Image (tube, rainbow, N blue to C red; front, side, top):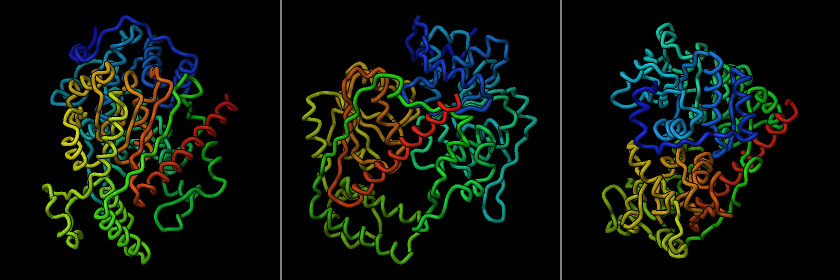
Length: 500
């Protein structure tokens, strides 16, 4: 009998009598999970990581293994992706689940199920760590491991493993203390090294507790990296990339979508945007401050990020209020909206031109800042804006309308829509009003549309790039990260073929 939460969730998902028939590559991935207690699937979005994993759990249960799975995933994926797959396919009718989120999570935990789904922030509630600060201000945690073991979880599954790439976060520290209580630890992600190989340490530790890359981030850095010439961060030491791939390959199966399914051609389109003289004047002044401070070592990495964010905001036509803007008060004071100044509408006009050109062909447009949302909402009153809330019923309704071709223009905050959505059935256009620094977010957002099931021959990715330095710097950074990401998959796939 299905758990109560399964019953309540079915209203969001259309029942299907179809049977999930695994492709050859999906059978290989399932076997990899079943044959490896510690395993990570680094699979492109659209290759079916969710169904592959559910089928592995189903087979374990069928063999008599007493499955009690703890899935840790972003909140939208908790509510939309895992329930949808279990409700969609006949294969998974025998699996029951509970979602440990919201006001009734205590009752959900008490009910018997095969699978319990929780978001990373919910681990604090589930595991109940005692926390304290050491003399250096770092948070330490103590876990009642006996209490946690009594819950009976024996399989840990991290969906979006990159959420645990930072070893210093509270969620990592909490989970680290109970990793040994699981018989199996599996991880799923499509962008494991979007921002560099340093990101692998935390992810691999969750899987193998340090077997591949060591138990300490300091040892990992010392072995494979050297300090960056700028003094900010680390870069890979010469000749160490292959060593990392060799170290992790026994626990990792890597697959690219292009190698296994027919995908539309991905076409990148740069739309140049010329800013106004006022915008360029303000931008130049702030950029000069940043460059000057960097040159004399006056600025930290974090404050450099703040300054660069201001430059990026200006490229989009607005900027949040700040004492540094006092010089320009006479120029822009009349265009102040609450906590931000409106400087330029050139990008909005360029986006209007693109949308007109598409003549109703659906487009997903990503923005980053709240002031962009407010300005875009005024400029495109007929457009639909994806909800940033945790209202999963509303999110599913928007997703369905898009896939039914009922939404010509869909806006979404880039981080909010980069995961857990299937938007491949209607449109083949994606646009970035502001291109994000984070390649993982950039790549994942594109793959909401560019994925298995999109019947178009091409998917177009439009980038609104202003004629100021920061937009070109971000595009160059995205390009470099893309190259590193692709080579990572290629090298790991080669090693996998050798070993298997």
